[in-house]
Length: 597
Ligand SMILES: Nc1ncnc2c1ncn2[C@@H]1O[C@H](COP(=O)(O)OP(=O)(O)OP(=O)(O)O)[C@@H](O)[C@H]1O
Image 1 (cartoon, rainbow, N blue to C red):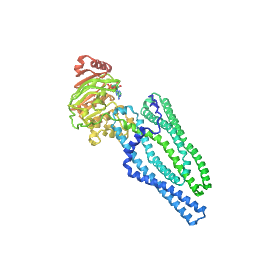
Image 2: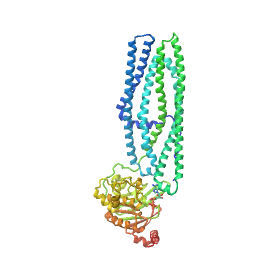
Image 3: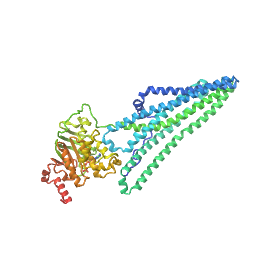
Image 4: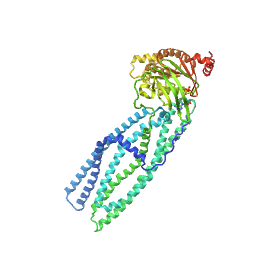
């Protein structure tokens, strides 16, 4: 179980704002925010009110100071104070309403995005899930979607508010004294330079941190699932070592991320200090000089204005820092959307077909990996209503044939037809509803046996479920366990009990095509005999395809295919194949000797 926790290629260093970022942000906007434009305008309106409150505050302060400096009337001062108070009450009200509304908007957007992600995931090919760890999927659907929600709902709205404050107050300051403002504006290029330097680094570290987190989650999942093997193999120290190393790696990355982010504010503060000094010196000179029309109140109000600008400006720099991290997260989510299914309903698919007809594979070519072809012009026919067995050495492709019939994978050449309808021209849901499968990898959910059986036919009546459970010899266990959950992946059941749940599902579903892949391999002989009899009843009139290693289980089949290395090497009835004295009869004889019969 050795997994490199940093297995993915290190993310390349990226630019501040790439074309891909633009594409992703536009996608997010069009998919989830654009439809909320009227509400966004409401938020923007409230944000602008907040900005104007500051501007009015400066103007009132300047007037108030003049009242004080020029010994005006007390009632004017009281009026100014009252106005300032009311302004801040208004700002307070906006400060409450803006996040309430924006968080609601963002949460709604992310809810939609999560639902789309789940929808999209469910359309993806089985192949995607065979190469992607659950950790990677959970990371995207759960934590990255949540991070994005916070970012859009809070950080972005705050940034718009801060940007509005900066623009409004700056405009007022320019109006008051363009010369002083320009002096203050020398800070801008320096801040932009700092931001560019830091953002590259942040993106790079964030991408690695996300990869490491996905791998870490995947590893925990694997360890939890494989705990039996971990314990029996005494691999706890190894697992601990791997996970500790991973946690250390994540810690190092988050410290590096914090360190990169932490460089921003002190740098901005240092540059701001220079500006204050320049403005106090320059402003003082302008007040003292008769060439300028500025008084003390104006300079104090100007400095206050600068202070009011610097705070949102500082926050804005922080926003751009967080933006870099969130662009990486957005890219990670978008990359899931870029995964496209290859198996889907094409235009013109039919809903009706004859599921009882013969199933024919003609010249089928298939490989899981291009460098490793499995089937090359494979021909097989499964007669409708009859029982066909596929046998052969391990890895010869038996299970794969079953997977191809229900379109879990798509073939690269040839055709698979039911009756005369190619299966890729049948609506997938209709095609798959024609199959009952008892496979080697039985999926048991952490709910009761009853719920697990019912899963394949939620509309089944209680009588039907009992009937299926009786046929699969699992009814007694239902009575004993009641509603008790079966543990993750049915860990509280024996292999044979899990298999009987899968068999009960097949009975309950009772679809016209029955695929049995080592369906009774985990059962004791007595139970197997009983279930086999029930299977024989179930299989009546159904097209049944059995994959089995134990050849004694398939001697009754109407036709037997012997696969070896992805090729049909023999076919016929049990008697034909025994007579041919080829691979089948060799396997059969050696198995009989092995079982001592
Ligand atoms: N999901 C997969 N991705 C890549 N390769 C696979 C996958 N499933 C099976 N294979 C490979 O395809 C080949 C055929 O596998 P398959 O499971 O069909 O064989 P089988 O005859 O059913 O074997 P067994 O009797 O051991 O169950 C094997 O070499 C296997 O390693």
